[in-house]
Image 1 (tube, rainbow, N blue to C red):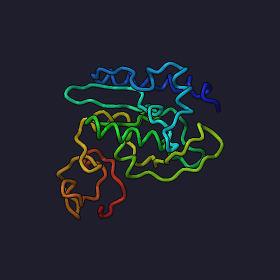
Image 2: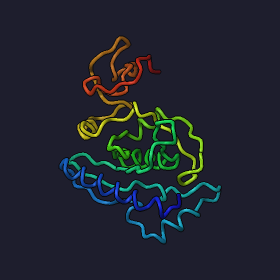
Image 3: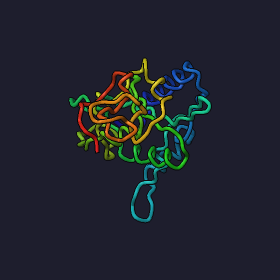
Image 4: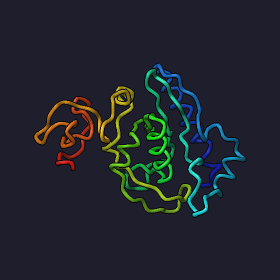
Length: 203
């Protein structure tokens, strides 16, 4: 599928995410690459630094949302689940750009998937798996994210408002190993949310 064939559905998904954020009380507007003219987007596909690394402006998130005092950067991912794996594909450069922006700007960064479910950039970085290109999409290197690590849309915004510490949601409920704050809790998400990974001791 060409860039232009992917563009229409992507813009539709971005608009749906914008409307969802606004319905949750956010001030939400297009941001980053969503503001670039088509000519700039096309040119960025061939731009790189002196070492041959692609310019990350191409992967800046599409949406900025304010829910004072919180600010979110949102990358609305339209692509279908990766072939028959049932997992979500996120371009490696997209995740890299989100993590850089989050750290540099003190802003929470999130991916919103086609189903409306979401995952934080920090959590995506923690649970990512290598992906193999099978002939569809942009052809750029990507990570696979298992669906079990995403948060359903009906509770997503409430989770987004919780502070993230050490790549997991803050929680003071102990598991058998400790609590999230001491870095030993087995929970990826707060047990109150009902979304957890397989119990295991985390480093």
